[in-house]
Length: 65
Image 1 (cartoon, rainbow, N blue to C red):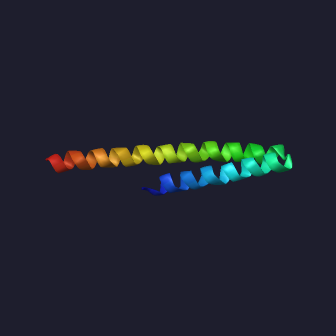
Image 2: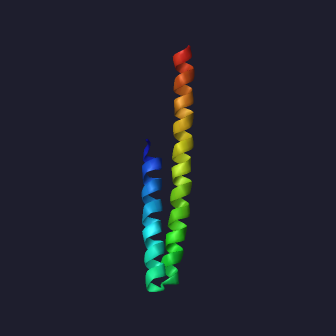
Image 3: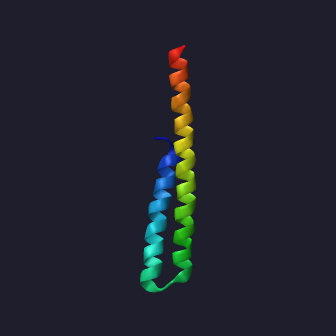
């Protein structure tokens, strides 16, 4: 796992907490921040996943040589 994967998943979790808290107290702004944080976290985690796949593919290719 790389730092982008970890940070993205942490941001997704924080966003989920904000979203639920916003719904619970009726705070639309907090709920919206949570949704935005979850989306940003997912994007960052996906970037980290893609980066890891490229790294693994490159390593396999080098190992074959």
